[in-house]
Picture 1 (spheres, rainbow, N blue to C red):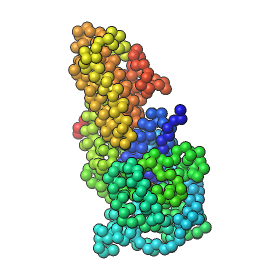
Picture 2 (cartoon, helix red, strand yellow):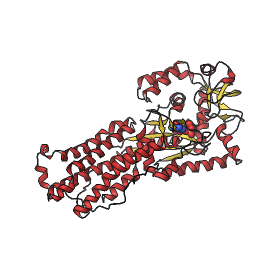
Picture 3 (spheres, protein in one colour):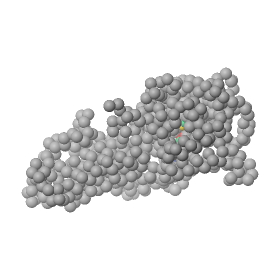
Length: 518
Ligand code: MSP
C-alpha cells in the first residue's frame, strides 16, 4: 500500500536577528508533528528556512557594517545551529536567496504578468517596515484620527508613507472564491477564532496588493524591470512550492498541497489571504490547513530587544536540557492560545512533571528491577493470564490505561492540540506512579509473592515503554534514553510489538534531576 504523505512547513524566519523562543516555538511544534507522523509511518516532508530579502534585513545588515550577503549568511548559520541543538528533524531548509527559489519567484511573476493578474501602477499608502506590511488608510483610521499618529495594527510601531511606481497583484479578483473556499472548508484556517478574524478582514474588501518596491535593491529583481525588486512577502510565500521544485518537480507532484502551514497568529493574514489568492491565480490547489498559534509574553511583558527580556532557547536548553524546553513549550499553553513564559513556571513544570512524575517512575521501576530481578525484566507470570480480569484489579487497569492512551492522543495530535496529548500521556504516568504506591512491590517482595511481584514489575515496564514511545515526538532524546535504559535496542526499539521481558536493563542517571529552589 502506498504510504500516506504529509507535508508541513514553518514560516521562513527573518534574518534580521538571531532565533529566540518565539521562533523556537513554531519550529518545535512543527517538529513534534513531523516526528509523530513519521512514527506513524507516513511519508513526511518537513520544510523550514529563512526569509532573507526586504528592507528590514537590509537595514539590520547595514548596522553591522558587513555586506548584506555576509550578514545574512552568518545569521542563517545561527538558525541552523539552533535547530540542530533543539533536535529539529527538518527535511529541507530553504533560503530565499538561493537560486532555486529566486528562479521560481521570477517565473511566477512572469507567468502572472502574462495572465494579467500582475499589472503596473502607482502605490501611494502606508507601510510598516518592521512587519513589511502595507496598511490601507481606513484600517489605520480605526485607531488614530491624525495621520501623524498612524500605527501598524500588528506591532504598534509608526508606519511610513510610500509613493512609488509598482506592480500590483490582483488580489481583489479572488475575494469571493476565497470566501467560498473558507466557508466550504471549516478546517482551512485554524483555530476557529483566527478563521473568524480572517473572514471579517476579507469582508471589509480586499485591495490589490503592491508587490514590487523601488526604494531599495535587496530583493528578487523583477524580470526586465531594472530598479524594481519583488515585495518580500510575495517572494517568501513562494518558498512552500519552490522548495518542492515547482512547477515540475517530483516532490511537488508528491507532496503538494501542504497538509499544514504552521505559524504565529500575526502572519496568518498573509497565509490565509495573499497566499491562497496567489495559488488560485496560478491554478494550484490550496493548502489543506493554515494554523495560527498564539504569542508568548515573558514574565507578563511583550518580548522585545528594547526591554531586554528576549528568551534565548539555546541558553535555556543549555541550563535545563533541550527536552525540558521542548516539553515546556508544548505543555504549558494550549496551542493556539497566547501564553506567558516565566522562569518560575518553567522550573515548576520541570520539577513536577519531569523530575517527579516521569523521572521518578522510570528510576524507581529500574531500581526495583535491579533489586528484585538482578536487572532483568521479569516475564508476565503465565498463570496470571488465567486470573479473571475483575480480580486482577489495579493490574489490568494500568495496562488498559496504557493501551488506551495510544488511541487517546490521536485526535489531539491531528488537531495540533499538543498540550492535550501530553496531558493524556501524563495521566498514564500518574496512574503508573500511583500503581507503585498502591501495589507497594516492596511489601509483595517481603511477603514472598514472586508471581505478583513479576506481574507488577512487568506491567510497569509495559506502561513505561508506551510512555517512551508516546513522548518521542515531544522529547526524542528522553524517549531514546528510556528505551535504552529498558535495554531495548535496534531498529524495533520503539515498536510496541517488541518483546520486553527477559531483557537486561541498563539503568542510567535520573532523567531530570530536581532543580533546587534558589
Ligand atoms: N518572515 C516572516 C514569515 C514568512 S513565511 C513565508 C516572519 N518571520 S519572523 O522571523 O518574524 O518569524 C515568524 C515566526 O516566529 C512566527 O511564527 C511568529 O509567530 C513566531 N514568533 C515570533 N515572536 C513570537 C512570540 N513572542 N511568541 C510566539 N511566536 C512568535 O514573520
